Length: 284
Image 1 (cartoon, one colour):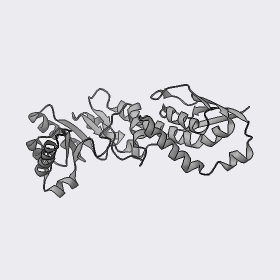
Image 2 (cartoon, helix red, strand yellow; image 1 turned 90 degrees about the vertical axis):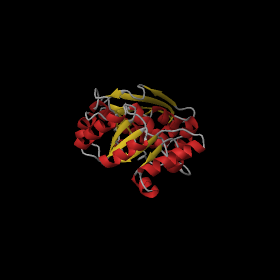
Image 3 (spheres, one colour; image 1 turned 135 degrees about the horizontal axis):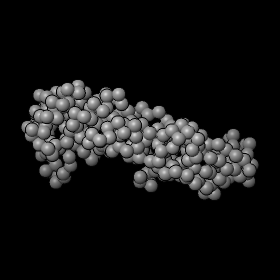
Image 4 (tube, helix red, strand yellow; image 1 turned 120 degrees about the vertical axis):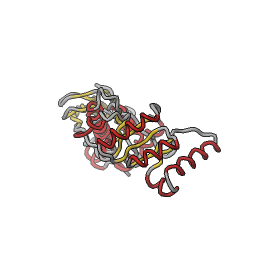
């Protein structure tokens, strides 16, 4: 992760939560008070966000020592220690919630991704995230997907041409949209992959005719996906195939077995359940 962007994210979160000051900690705990605590997993999952949590405490007080007991991407069970924290009590108390918010959400994403990645193991299909991320936290959430065994789709609008239904409608068709993109790339001497979203076999034929790098099968039935994969492979083994739209864990394996290369899952970042992690605090 980009360290400068990470610092900006953490500082923004602290500004939101601390504001003019943590009045409770400042008014109840002495400036010289020291404390220690342990972050503990209260359920099984995949840990992610330890460096983010560490930075939260460092931004508040350089004297706080944050020692990780596991690494990002490690699996833990209920009761496992994740990290130990020691130092000035005020700083630990002030940073507790922000650090846990990051750690719980990122670990929740990693845990959910791991379940999806495990479900397609052995099929050749890979799990992708989407741009359905929390505004301002995309870097963290996409990192969490990687920690869980998934892969990142495009990071933003600038690193891949992804022609979806509204682009197709606005430009007059799949052929027109793809040709426009290819002409523009040629004129600016820039090469990046082109992906086209298709909803049926007719649109698939249009995409194959003009030539693209990847085809997204959007909200197709499993049977339609099988047919689509067969049609693509008749034309090229190089064109990548992505399944998307309404993907759930219940029918994930069936989708993977159609032969698609990727399955994109928006729920990984827009609907994860936070991993339950607690900071058990001890004064000293």
